[in-house]
Image 1: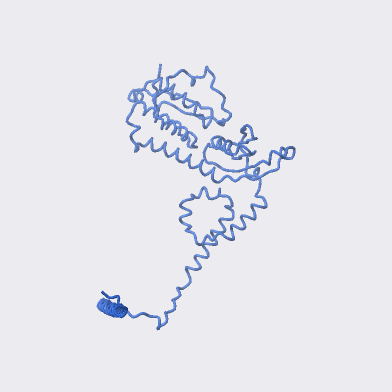
Image 2: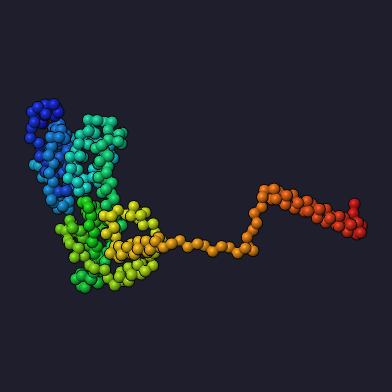
Length: 336
């Protein structure tokens, strides 16, 4: 028998919250099965206490048949957009994301018109979480820089190529999703993706996950990259760029993750110093043009008079030419 779902009765006779413990921060399957069971028992969102373990998504075992969350609860019809919203929002690092998603699921079942209300507070909050996760995934794909490392596998089998190692600090639980994308995109090379939470490694055939690493575990820039950064610093004229526009398009939390960011900050400071120096200098007056090159201004009456005079002279010259041609034709006996 389910808990009392009447809000008034629940306020008069408060009951203990129903605890739900998920196996990891990205346990989407566990959340889906638990939410179905709670809906089948008609348990209000305010009567549920969600807890999350520390098990990464790649270490989550299959749900045992005797698990309470694995009951044979019927499937709940929801819009396809809500399923995609859950898949992204559940990867967010905000602790209250499970309460928000179950409350949205409850409301979608009991309020069919909610799916057509884009201004709803819960729906807007869930979309914000999903957008931040998608943005973090985009930045991770854009800023990851792989560096070649000659490990033991390369020394024993050089035909397989070196190991490419990258370091990144994501804000949300997105390593598993990005690793699957990299495995399909860079399937011909061996690579390792190191993050503080989880590390991923592709050996050319299968994907492996391990606990998080530190920045010291990542390789330092090689000689070729150092030369390229030095060339970039000499040729990139940041003073000509709109620095406020660059900062608007690149939030501060992502600037330090840019490749070569340690050289970008001194360049920005130098550009600001040059700009301040130029702004503090007094304005110089441009030299006046030469007097003989100056064109006198003409009034409208002068322009009209000159135009008509020019037309009259052009008409007289045309009449003289026609008369000359007629005399020549008459002399030749060709005139009509």
